[in-house]
Length: 130
Image 1: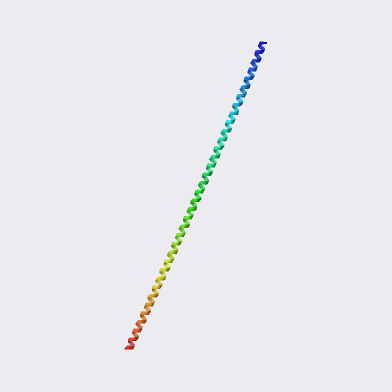
Image 2: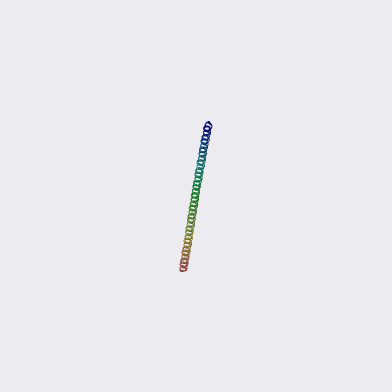
């Protein structure tokens, strides 16, 4: 009877120990699963952050390129306007110079005609006096 009791107690102890080991193993597996899930979540968050950062840098770069393009177009337009203004000014100066030259030519012709008429008048007067 004592041996039976001892055997039963030993079997119960072994059963309890096995159950405790099973519980410990299960807890360790759950901890490992939880840790893996947390690491996966952390990795996913880091990847999303990296993706967001890359998208922001792309947007910033695109905006800078658009700004540079706009600035270049504005400078080109300003240069073109300045060139057109310079061309118009040169054309106006040319027209003014031409008009002045024509005026001078006309004045010289009128003076020549006046001089010729005066000489003819003097010649006529001399002939009459003669």
